[in-house]
Structures are given as C-alpha cells and as structure tokens.
Image (cartoon, rainbow, N blue to C red; front, side):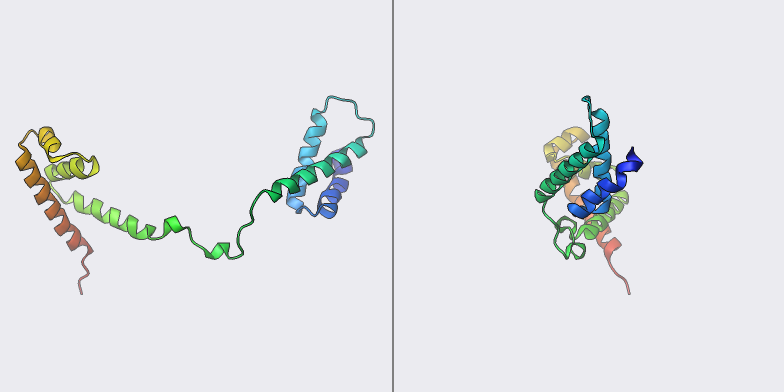
Length: 157
C-alpha cells in the first residue's frame, strides 16, 4: 500500500504545497503511521491518505510560520559568546602550567583563597597557622606565580 500511494502523496506535498522533498518524505511516513493507528473503518483508503496528506502539509506550513529564518549571512557570523574563547583557554592553560611549578603548599594556599573563595583566616585555620602568616603566604605565592606566568608567556628573541 505504501509503494502504491507514495508517489501520489509525494506529489501532493511537494508540488501542491511546495514542501521540500525530504520533509515531504517525513510527512508521508507520519500519514502512514496515522493510517495504521486509526481504529475506524476506512472505505476509500486513497481519499483518506490524500486528505491526511493535505492536512499534514497545512500543519507543516503553520509550524514553519512560527519559526524565524536565519539571516543570509549566518555562515559568516560568529557566536558572540565565543569571541576571545581561544585566548581565554590559552590563559587558563598557562595559569594551570604556572601553578604546577609552585610548591604544594603554595598551590593549596592559592586554591583555597582564589578558587574556593576562602578568607585568609579560613586559609590559616585550614593550614593550621596564624592569619598573618596566611596573608603573607597568599601574597608571596601570588607574587611567585605571577613571575612564573610572565616567564612562561614572555617572548624571547
């Protein structure tokens, strides 16, 4: 039955309703699924299929009318969120590499303070030391990681 009526239904969708052929094929499948799921007796199968195809085609265009087409120069445009993404990743990778050159205690201190957002007093409690020493440690470790970062990113000629 599918082979017998496929070309007629394709003609209705593609020629009468001007639906692209790939979408017309999808509509044909939907119509046949609907036909197979129908529980009522159908006297004229051909007429039912053509009417169902017309309804499906009208529904297709109603749904297409609710979508907004992309601009003609869409392929030339970039995602605004991706602007500078390569630089951001390069910076993150360089910072990660710079942190690897630090001693474990400095890495842990900077992690607690900058990545977990802990205060110097919290860092001091975590490291079991005084707040003043934790502040000094944060300062010195940050200074050291900046030096390492600048050495990594400097261009030598």
